[in-house]
Image (cartoon, rainbow, N blue to C red; front, side):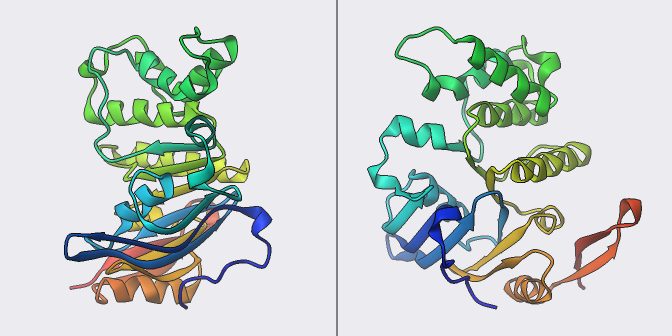
Length: 269
């Protein structure tokens, strides 16, 4: 299976990218990437180090210049005013910076800025959205604590709450599981599935292959290209994933909790 062709109807696409290329110096980081992500989908972008995963996500967010076209909910990203873009798309990057003296509540409230007038005080809707986000990420207990007093995992959950508080239809997350312990990684996976079921679109770059295999779809990357975009439960997608890791992993489906099945990537000697 190769990269997925553009669907017949673009009306249901949340994000589309056509012929995306990025060259940094002499290195071709992305090479003519096409990507079409339907609304209400959790897509995990996976691949070995240096495949171009984070670069692709930054292009989708409009954070990195590139050739080609990126569209968000049917509108070219370049045509969207900054405030409209910020309402439609939330971003969580790697090693996000935030002032250590801000409380967790204040950091999460930053996600509401696209909805507020210039210098306007937060409205009741803003407070409600922040409360929902902090509770969803289990960060409510330390809402009054400065970010500098939190552990790496706690800090990551507050930054995730900031992205959720935007209540945008599209969320882009680069390594969202960084610093999270296994139970909170499982919580994030359940959150991503819930967002997708509610009609929102989650695109996440993940190194944790077992978490990625729980997504709806995988975009498998290698050397600046998408080698496969398909359902995470499709055997052809598994073969593509095994191939980009030089067959040093094997994807298997095993019995899961509650009588269901779960997909895992097993390391091979």
